[in-house]
Amino acid sequence: MPQPIPPRPAFAKWLGDTNDVTQIFLSAGQIPGLINMAGGLPDPQTWPITTLSDLAAKAVTDHPTDALAYAPIEGLPALRDLIAARFNAPGLHLSRQNVLITSGGMQGLDLIGKVLLEEGSLIAAQTPVYLGALDAWRPRRPSYRPMRLEANDFTPATALQGAQFAYTVPNFSNPTGRLVPLEDRKALVAAAQATGTWLIEDDPYGTLYYDSPPLPRMLSLAATGLPYDGPVIYLGTLSKELAPGLRVGWVIAAPEMIQALVMAKQGSDMSSSGLSQRITLDAFASGLTDSILPNILTLYRDRRDALCAAMQTHLADLFDWQTPSGGMFIWATARNPALNTDHLLRTALAHGTCITPSSVFDPAGQNRRAIRINFTFNDPEKLTEGIRRLATATRACLAQAA
Figure 1: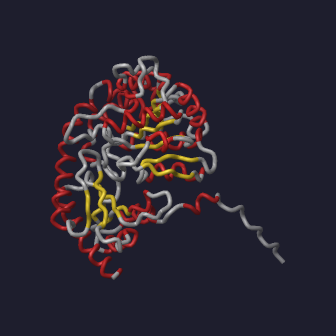
Figure 2: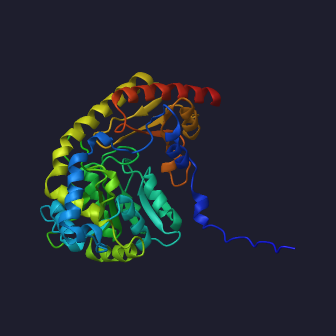
Figure 3: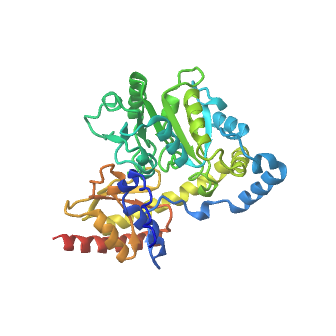
């Protein structure tokens, strides 16, 4: 008689904390004719394909060791120097010791979790919270203290006290598209300095200002005129500035934090792609990113305006929202509290469109009254049709709930 096969070890407990909504909208791309407004995707037509191809060939031909060998864990020294120089500002003195190159912005979030979080650690987080950050830190099963920066009674020092770190996306927050005002930025930096709490400034959308000049980064506001050793941990990425497939990001922080992150990265991927780093170095040095930015801003501004116009026509009686002054998203809250936007996601898919429900941006998964809509990926005609379909789906969903 064959011996019974013993059970295999169980999967880690944190896997049971995930939601199925993310899987639903990521697999939605297989639906024929679907208009996907759920993701945070740049439009491929913004990618300078010919120039990137030339830069890739040049990287392999002229710098084969940089491009094809293992790179230093910290990143190519020349790229670290260049990023330090790009982010230097009056009073803010950065060197390569302040810079770590990462495999996309997401790796920066993951590494921060590895070096700062124990199971159950407290995170003060700008609410709603970017889904990718929640996913990055989920294995450590932290607890969250919501930070509603726009609330009249919000007190930064109280919010940061006792937290392992505070997490913010001040430039056109994902998911709300909110721009944190200058005075609030100053207050957060002052609170971080007073409490000793690390303050994360996640900035994937910092170049996507459509209506006004950029506000000072919190990294700059934390400057003291000395070599940078402040509490702000700044995360940047090339994904929205050039192309996401390069998977190049960076962390700018105090040298002690960079060294801790280097130790974590050593056990993660050893090093980021040398080829992608070399392409990035040459793209920055040649002014490529600066030259393509005006066209990106014009394209996305027009799409934002088209989406808002369509929403005004089809959704004004169903949702409330504000027009963002930059970024990639609009956050809309249902007027009728009976609308469950998890249910709306499924109904919208049946009507040929896809949005992201608010529950995935809530650590407790309880907020089911809002949606995030992306405007950068689709042209104005598709955005208008997508919103028309969404309006039909919303009314059907409300009828089912009645």
